[in-house]
Image 1 (cartoon, rainbow, N blue to C red):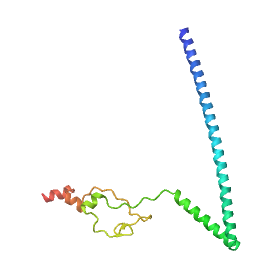
Image 2: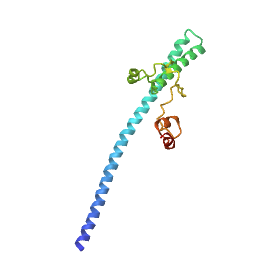
Image 3: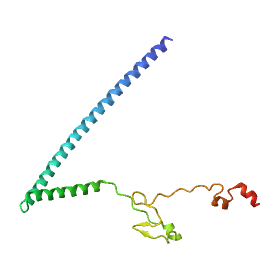
Length: 165
């Protein structure tokens, strides 16, 4: 029995040692990766700051060039308008594009569905617009309930089926 206790003690010791070595190796690797990412982040931040100052210098140059032929206030106002338009254009370019309204599918065109619809502004006139100017999403079909005209046609009400027979 003593031999088994010694082996269990050695096994525990070995597992503890392997766990410690693996933990240190992972910790060292994460430190190295963090050091590289920190350096990259600092360089990107410095690059952004330099680009900001370069943009300010270009805006100042545009304003001073306009000020040669215009009053100073007009040159500053025109420069501000140009920067505002550029900022708006960049913001719009960064936004994800809105989905285009879908036209009729090839199957609908082949079956003639929707030929009587009048299209106004890219949407069928019968389609109610949502808050985004797009038609409501399609509603899934609902099983007919007892007493509804569709259920009566399908023979859905057992009471009425008994009276028909």
